[in-house]
Image (cartoon, rainbow, N blue to C red):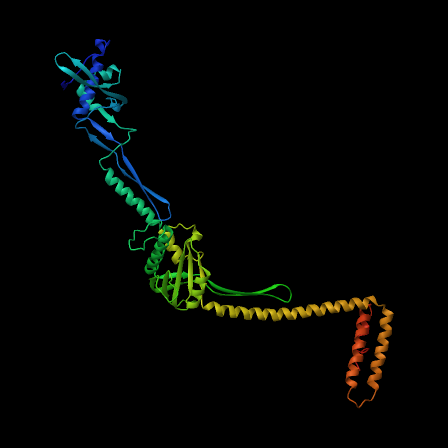
Length: 437
């Protein structure tokens, strides 16, 4: 059986001859696509994503812009939209239905009849010649979706490159091939951050050191804490050289730098530890102290564990909130100064405590004086004054008279104080106490 394709045009069943103009318009639309029709292609968007070291996916999109193309050849399989422009500027959206009909022709075999239908009923449009329709009609592709595109491979590679760039900017991508096998993604990311910190410090050649503080606190004699703090305040220092994970005896710092002298901090080696999810163990702290080298920690987890390269640069160089001193030799001298301050404050509090106790004793003594009647104290006062006068008039060559006089006067003064508490302050006059003699 042979198939023969040929142009075909006929009236639909039941169509009136007056519809010939409409049918002519349908044929003209077919000719439009075959000869010099224009087609507006939609944009082509394609995405790609990569999994970062943290497990987070980074996605990027690229786009090939839409374009207007001229149709060289085509096969009609589905419905399409077109825009028809009239002389007065009005535009009419029309639909083109394409199909292929198959029929048997006696003596000729099977005939394939391609048909395109321009769905219009306006006589003004139907009256246009095929050439006029071809000139005015533009095929639209609004709402079209690409199933495949000539540049898909290139677009996919471009999107993949952008996705990797996002992961790199998020410090979540490491292409290094010289890493030991068996490292987890967390270990690979920490290695990446160590490399990036070294790169940043080598490039910036400076770091803002956090304040170093030492505090001493003891319980004072008054029951309140006594505390003193000494500081070496935060400052930016310059760096001369930076090395990564260099073995130094029992320690292997993440980053080792040599700092120049600042206003407050002395020059010398500086250890920098970068922590993400791990913590500095007590054993490691002991080893750092044994090295007697200042050790600084930069804790990424304080920023949620995720930072961009710009944020990480600011964190490493300028930020101090995420930094803390693990060890610094200056701490010992700061603690010594703080202890001296605490001791000075404790001496002051001891003296104050004694004054408080003395005042309490005096208060208890005055209370006791008030409990005894004034006549009792009057009689005791007169007896004490008489005893003092008698002792003063006695001639004594033993050398002990002075002590007896002191004891007698103490009794006189005590009785005078008691009388004063009862409303007789004149009992404490110097003349009565023999001081005016």
